Amino acid sequence: MSIELDFMAVLAEWPMLLRGAAWTLGLTAISAVLGVALGIACAWARTEGAAPLRWVVGAYVELIRNTPFIVQLFFIFFGLPALGLRLSPEWSSVIAMVVNLGAYAAEIVRAGVQATPKGQVEAAMSLALTRAQTFVHVVLPPALRRVWPALVSQIIIVMLGSAVCGQIATQELSYAANLIQSRNFRAFEAFIIATLMYLLMAMAIRHVLNRVGDRFLFGGRRG
Amino acid sequence: MVDFTLWDIVRNLLLAARWTVVLSLIAFVGGGLVGLALLVLRSLDKPWLQRLVAGYVQLFQGTPLLMQLFLAYFGLALLGVETSAWFAASLALTLYTSAFLTEIWHGCVRAVPRGQWEAAQSLALSFMEQMRHVVLPQAGRLAVAPTVGFLVQVIKGTALASVIGFVELTKAGTMITNATFEPFLVYSCVALMYFALCYPISHYSRVLEGRLHVRH
Image (tube, rainbow over the protein chains, first blue to last red):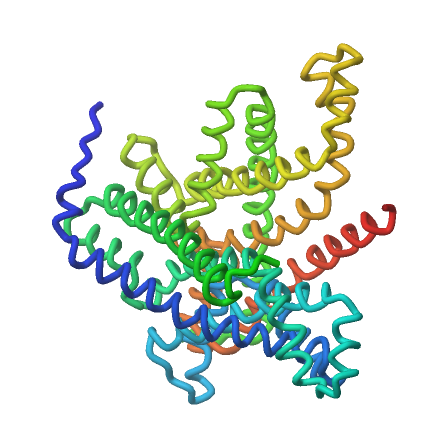
């Protein structure tokens, strides 16, 4: 028995692979920004909000964290049109990724917020800052700095999870790999190359976001 | 067209949920055994082995589970193995689980203070004896909560096996949707069933974690 691998047949389709990777990175970038913002809002609601709001946000976080991403995606793409909300595959993917990341980011940010020393909040209050000002200016920046590595890991998990979005015909990297293997029947080679591209992207995102966190978001200071 | 009542939908989904549970158990037990073997390899004083295991972990943590499933499915076929969705899904999920569990456990072993190792060495215990009687009992206590928590990730991970044609809860949901044209209802039921499976485990994991902190 001999196994013949032909990677060139797959690499010949490099424009498709690159376009897929660009889609994956684009989807990840949008959902990272919106998802972390949603997570911060939910973390605020769960620590500072009124009791009913806390409960609703808690239910959202638990529901998302205890169901698979693919089911969330199918629910949005196939289920919501029944309610009259018809979304393109790309929008469905972005919404699913944002909603998913938002729930995990909420818990991560909340952990950071809860680690804030009490004295800092009291100091802010004694300077007559409002509760909202205290949260935004005093509590949040060091909290984000504390949990930044965990947020970066979660963003990477969402990026890897976005491979599922190809199943509803979003043209990201795994979709490109699938399309290539359906044309030249080099399934194993196509998925090996796509997998390595995901690995590279995961490493690159970690590197870049850690840098961005250190240099820009937190002004070079380490918490 | 066959008419599906709500009970028909729920009953069929429950029947399929069995396979989600079975696949999760296979992956969790298999992954636990492989993960334990990797943990031992990584704890030996061999830098190249440590690097190898670290690379293995990074490979599985840095790539999508969906790709791992595809590679297992098409890779086994390439090797000439008579492959089924069952086997490919079990293999991919076992390896995936082993990478995460070995990393979790590695962290727990490292959390055992160095003095404990040194004390065990000074009692002339062999490496295996040190592990068995001194390190693992302490690391194990730390490891229970995150290990139970990871079971939730495994259960959610099995949903991806639907993509390579393994009929579990998600795949059954898709099939029933195609027959009933009621995606909203069906996927709501599917989501609730995953929630019913996962939430008690998440909750239990948090309780365990809380208990650990109380003792300190």
